[in-house]
Length: 163
Image: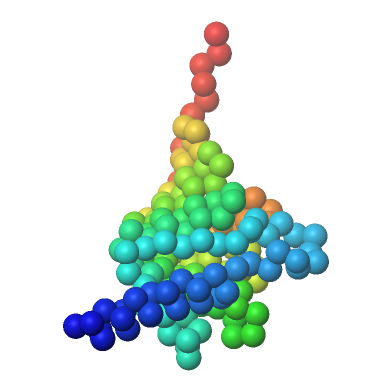
């Protein structure tokens, strides 16, 4: 029992330290494009790290935060670069919600691609900003350009009454 407790604590400590090394974004990158600001901090009730596959599986009440965006999901599979340790992709599943400013995007699944700075939402995606709502079959959020590409879209715009 004591040996198992020690191994479990050691694994948890190692995983936390590894995440700080592997899941930091490249703050010093020389690029004119907007990138996710600051490091990505991910919390969950359960974590399984696979150093050979360069992945980390977060499960149960997962929250990924940057300084300007928060993503919630039931689970996230994070892929990171072998050399730099930077996040390259995040596959999120189950009750996905992304909050950036006053915009909220929900879907059953989402895939974040770091190289293109985009998130592809599937499974009844819906974007809400104020009283305006956009839905579709698939929704791609281009983060650098702050715009959406929506397939099979329905748009509901609400104009406030002028007085």
